[in-house]
Each structure stands twice: as C-alpha cells, then as structure tokens.
Length: 67
Image 1 (cartoon, helix red, strand yellow):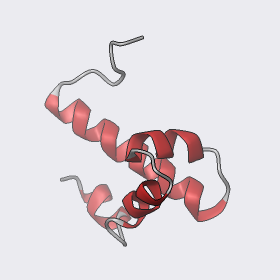
Image 2 (cartoon, one colour):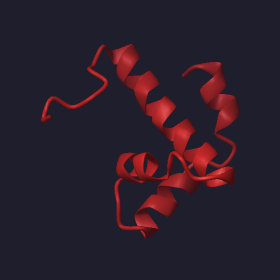
Image 3 (cartoon, rainbow, N blue to C red):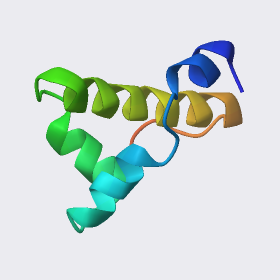
Image 4 (cartoon, helix red, strand yellow):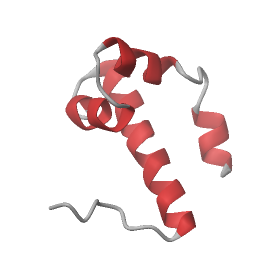
C-alpha cells in the first residue's frame, strides 16, 4: 500500500459505513458525493483515488466495459 493511502485513511471504514447507510456501494456513493463540500467531498475523492490506485497497480481498466 502506498504511503499516501496509509496516511490519508485516518478513520478506516467510516466512508464505507456512510455508503452502507445510504444503501449504495462505496463506489456509487463516492461518485455521487465527489462534488460535495467539506469532509464528505474529500472522503469521496479519496475513496475514488484509492480505488483507482488499486486497479492501476493490478493492471485492470479504470472504467467498466459495460458502457
């Protein structure tokens, strides 16, 4: 895991709990809230960046091919 991910995740699971409470997946909730102001927007952008970093490291495509 990259250092910026370790240092950026101060409260692991907090964003996932918010997504679960909203009845959405973490990715769907992050996409919906990425332009929100304050802490929620920062958490959403961090979640999206962390998910993309994992896919890039594994060599997977960034977007699904369902489009």
